Length: 47
Image 1 (cartoon, one colour):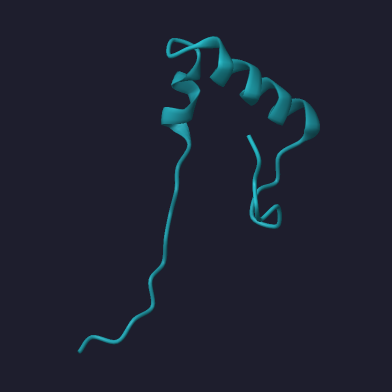
Image 2 (cartoon, helix red, strand yellow; image 1 turned 180 degrees about the vertical axis):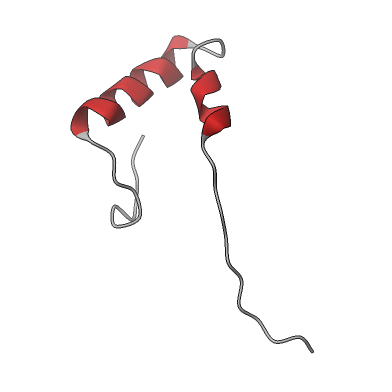
C-alpha cells in the first residue's frame, strides 16, 4: 500500500505495518477498515 499524499495520513511505522499485514491476511482480518471514518467538506457555489 502506498499513500501519495503523506501529509494527510499520520500512521506510525508499526501501525502501517500492522494494517498492511491484516489487509493481506484476507477478508476476515481486514474488517478493521470498516471502522475508518472519512469526512469531506465541499465548498462550491449553489448555482
